[in-house]
Length: 351
Image 1 (cartoon, rainbow, N blue to C red):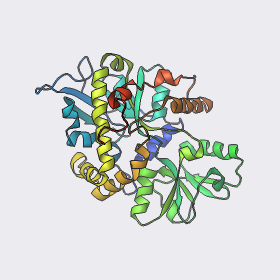
Image 2: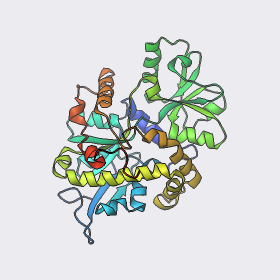
Image 3: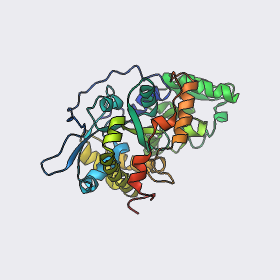
Image 4: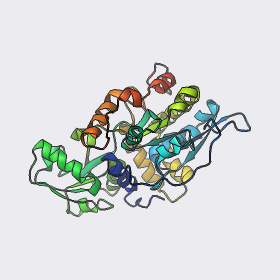
């Protein structure tokens, strides 16, 4: 179980580190996975299905409910695929498992992946779960923080890893009289009045507060002028070139899974808690998360999209703050051919 599920913020703590470039080199690889065959797709099962192992970027929570929906509803089997999803954790970096060949595909934070690519790892981004990162400044709805200007005169609880970035944003905007304090592991600093803003995951802390009856306002990174994706889908360049059809089949089924979850959030949220993860998750909390995250997953072009132009903005920002040591071209980092083939000119596969 996620150790912060009372106020489920452990994913936020991990991704915040990497979001602002403080954690990419700090986490050791861990958790050896079952090695794949030479093709890294795992070969063929006894009933003739292609076996694909996917490394999740975190624990088996509802942010990955689209994968489970695709399994439960038979979308992978319809593509003649047998899937295996390996849970991540605090000592597992999904990109390392993919780059090493232990997993055919996976998802990870875009900053972590970009840092790895800049250092020569043969990774490619072919989609994204969250069209904007759920990381945000959470405030009470009756005293909302709606812009960087609203930081003025406030006490804001932020992680140590993200503090420098927020200080930079405040300075750039010319905002004065802001007091930053260390963010705790849950948002009680907000409810007790210690802070009027709390940095955390909207899909975790904001949902938890709402379930406690606290009406909140969420200010996303995008609202602060920080472009971001959450959980980019990755594979190796070799897999993309040599097993393009397998990736298309996998992604096509996954698209259907995320579309199904968005259309039936309560059903899939509860199934995640009771069937996919048996470590004590609360069905109603996962259902609430599934409902909340719909707006972060959808886009006008469909689910799991990634835009090279937006990724270039992300790259440029990371270069500016020194997280990435050299300029990357988004066209060398992002490949949209799998998405294009999977959608076949449509914006939805279940509609």
